Length: 279
Image 1 (cartoon, one colour):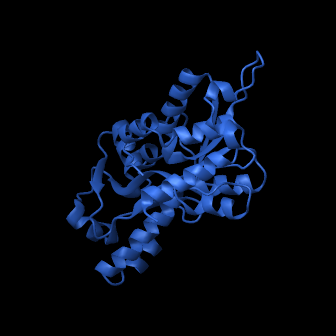
Image 2 (tube, rainbow, N blue to C red):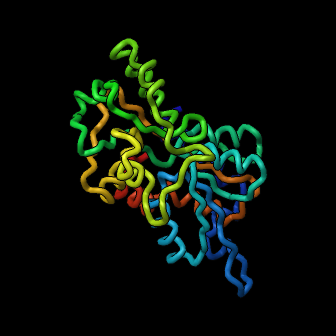
Image 3 (cartoon, rainbow, N blue to C red):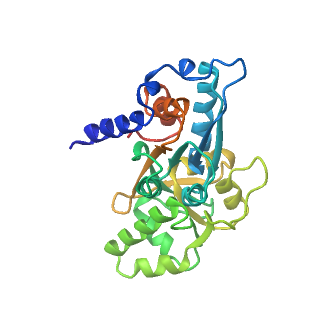
């Protein structure tokens, strides 16, 4: 089955959860009661914050349907959902966490809706370019910040990068695994002050010399702290990040409609403006 066919098949599965009701326009799917419709609860990866907040705002303005967004590390959000927290849509920075929910039976098969990539966010005191990045990361005096594997896909992608580094330079994985500073993505990770982006704040505070994170995060951090630099990961080390969404099998039609809208041209255009790639 080709990728477009797989995507179409998964979307059909999403829509089938609510039958014909999901095919109605959003306004029709809402209650005819005079009171405002209940907000759709969406749990989403923290790296989606800027783009998804804009999309949800546009969606509410267009349809009148409120969307309540909760952001965090995808693995931690998945654990909260497994413990019974009530959300109708889950947008993860990987495919594994939504697939684990689907395998348990209460959520639909996930659909990849955007893609991302890793970049290196560096201090202005670090001189690096794609061709020299690995040697810089391996230097004993360079502190490498990462997210936390298993609870945050960004950490998992970073360790996959470390594995690729081993193929380029034997011994690199052991060095990088030992020196990586897991500064975010865990339940007890420090939070930035109100109004600040974590990666900009962390680098501004000097917590790391190089931070391996999503390119979208790196670009946003540089916009907040212009002296930071964004270095592209060379092809030999690059790891693609596929973001997938799923919906609860008890989700109302309005939630299905919103989930479907994230794959449509209007939302995809917003994602691309914020640096995400197409599915």
